[in-house]
Length: 190
Image 1 (cartoon, rainbow, N blue to C red):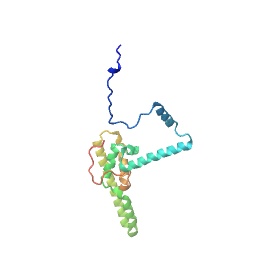
Image 2: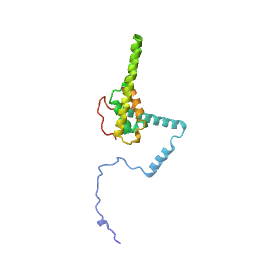
Image 3: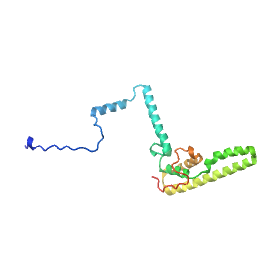
Image 4: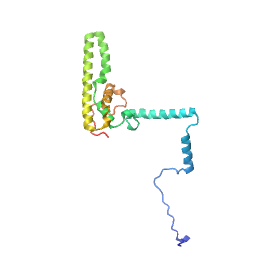
């Protein structure tokens, strides 16, 4: 009914887009070809093994880096979550007697040559100190977990995780400690 004539057409306005993805959109045919190629995967056994090996190597490199930096995304499942991060920080913020166990055992072996009685006394004192410190860590951990994470099911296995972490020498712990000795911990872990 109503036809526009050439004179009635609005003037074309040119707008410049400030942002964008910086590349042209793929055609449907190109996208389908890429999807088919990805779905097919490597053709022979050697190529498939090579691809899996490189993928595994890349994944373990990311995990190793996460163990050094504490990046939650790439940590193993046993170390993920706010509860486990709090346990790591709590253990790392204090000096545990269990981490001194190895140097004390060397001292006990050296003292065995000097005096067997001294060695025996050092051994008893070491066991008592490590045991008392471990019990203290467990009680403090349980109290803090019930206060900070009430009713959280992820606290299961927390005691064993804390004990194993406290036994390790600080500079050999993985994931690496993210807090300094004596540092005050944040109230919230999310």
